[in-house]
Image 1 (tube, one colour):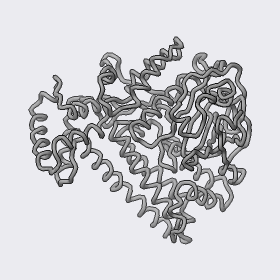
Image 2: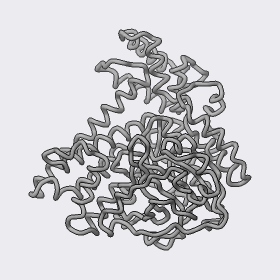
Image 3: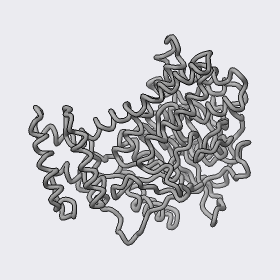
Image 4: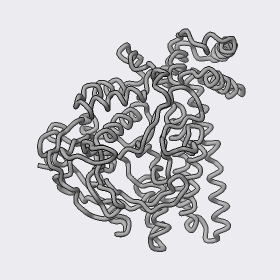
Length: 486
């Protein structure tokens, strides 16, 4: 049965020391029902999409059956949560194994909401339907936007309730990721592991994600450099589309440079660098403008773990680590500035570009302009009736922008194409996501969600069927809040 589906598991993580994981089986559920399934992703994984949607396939996605070759395990890790160190681990997730896909890539297949583990810390190990569908929607939208992310293969209702503030329908998400190695995995190895566990983990990480540095004179220094580079590029991509992760704890920062753990995340509507959505982030630690510096803070925790591998003299190791961490700011700024130039149709570089970009953002903040729709309007050449577009300040800015475009060798048509490919026409608007989740959870109507997912799969298409999804929420809705739903 599983051979027909196409599972091709290897389990390299299970070869790490036993302290890094607990081997156990998923907890069976009573009445699994497939709610949403990603056929395109299944095919790319080398799986038979039809068979995986059969009764046997759904039982695998629900944790009722373990496919041949899988080695289910809960990973151990730690993390700084809002700056405070905590021992953690997969409290409601199991890694089934690593699927070797047709192109040779190795990808984690994880069940989220699959039952209690030794790391559950009093929790039930389950998940409710709404947050699992939310992760499906947002992660697939991020993929379509071209942002490195874990992906979602399926969501299955368990037929069993979970109890939070109220009784909710239970669900399991099948998550696909390059790996689930986190900064917090290294923190765990440093704090709780044996003396050589950090080196073992670093060697494993290099083999899996950065084989290009294996032969370097100090490959552990190269590992730190590579992770810094990937995170600088990732965070710039977040900022360019107005994405706010919401809970940038070190256990939510991957070593591979993928976005992971879509809990209280959201996309910014009105441009305001202080925007924060998470109900538990009362101090704004993870606000939009703080995401780049928090990334550096998290990377510093990784560097601390690697210190013994960077140099035998601790003072020298600290100096090396600090030097590498200092590169993040310029790397991030380079990616962000290049991305903002593209959003304005600029191919070349001029010294006043940063001022031009900064002045536009200042106008957007001053006039409470919608972030995505502002760039959409600039791309389409539309000047809808708005306080910002009608202001004298914007008209002056627009004259400078047009002059800047005219100084390029590239044609206006080329600039327009660059803008279309850099400015999404739509994002997962928070109120539209909530609308889809309410229909699914409250009324078992999944069509609203499926239509939303379909539209979000082509964010740069600029088609008429997207128009209804570009409207910001009504101001009467008040400030949007997200919660760490489980």
